[in-house]
Length: 255
Image (cartoon, rainbow, N blue to C red; front, side):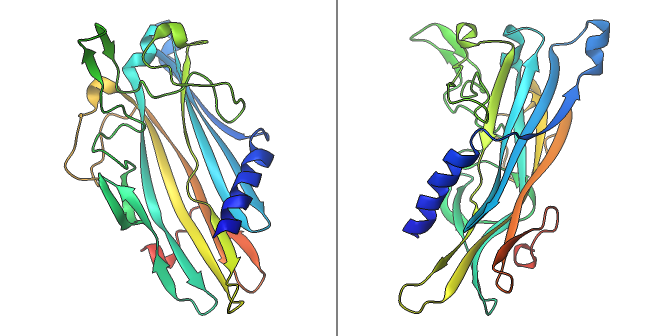
């Protein structure tokens, strides 16, 4: 598995600033000059090289003003699974931290809220959000969002709910799911593969419309302003020794 880690680092360097695919939404209400959020963009960047394949995502929220950005956030839903297999088709499900629990099966049969450590539906939410008595400031739930696009620059950091940290009227979140990869056992010389068959839905919401916690990860939060989809869905083909990009076709092991 050390080889997989090394390759991951190499690919991160190679593909960090490649030209991404971009989906855009422009708020039609802004044409009349009556809007707080101007638009949303979804940047994705696929790689399929040598021993690994996967996709990464960055979502951008653009506000009419910098002050408006504290009012909006992203909810991400995830469907699919990550599993290990061999040439005989034996399946071993992977694990992840999910909904506050460690070592949960990495398997989402239907779309579920993509949250690891807490039950706040907002992606990249700050568990310490709220009024800070010590500093006398209000910390928004999206304060972990960053002030520059991580897919195109290394110069970014958390905006921390401070307008002074913003470079313009935009904030970002990113995701780089577990990639698919293959390895060879040094003793048996048999090939095994890790397959990530994942679909995602990213939705823009007004934070005040999103509950702080929900009971079930299968909860769909109403009132989305706009939603966009993306995937990281590569399955290793033992016959061709390459990764097949399955896109929306979730693997049977995830169902």
